[in-house]
Image (cartoon, rainbow, N blue to C red):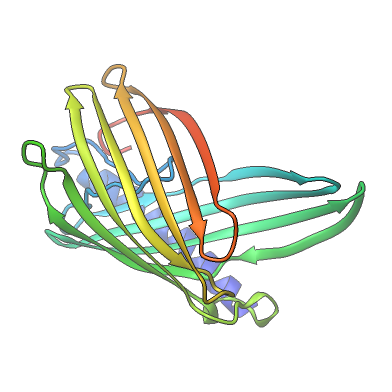
Length: 238
């Protein structure tokens, strides 16, 4: 209970800090906001030194496998990014998730409802884009099991890393892709991951993206997905 209360306070604090930071930086923002969301591909671009950037949202998934149905609600998926140095970004993230399971139309109630383990990590800028050479970044994260209650605490610490690359194609379009691996919180086996996204700016406000991504676990079958979306820019920093 104390852990959840603390994380709720942190969540609210991040929102107010982000709003204050957005107001204080609004007149000094010279570059457009670049986010790691809403797609699966992480951008190699870093938050500028001394700046705070908050990315948050929600999602819903409905998964079906024969007679088993699983509904996943992500009520809060927040990521706090802080530019510590010109080429180093600190990252802090957490989700509030709820899972509902049905077998042959029989409901089992809620499962694993609560905050996911706290995510801490860094993003390092390796190289700027130059000619045919892409912009390159390296990201690494830890999912800390002690940050959640004992009832849903994973046995081990989750670890992931990925290299992020970005190419400019035209003035209005570009591609980005990630290559990396992850070790789950309850499994010692590695899962190799990839992403590839194409983005196109319709105008100064609207953008489109199309993406393919997946993972290749060591001892299981691979998973491959695609998604697409629309983005709308309210301001340079919103």
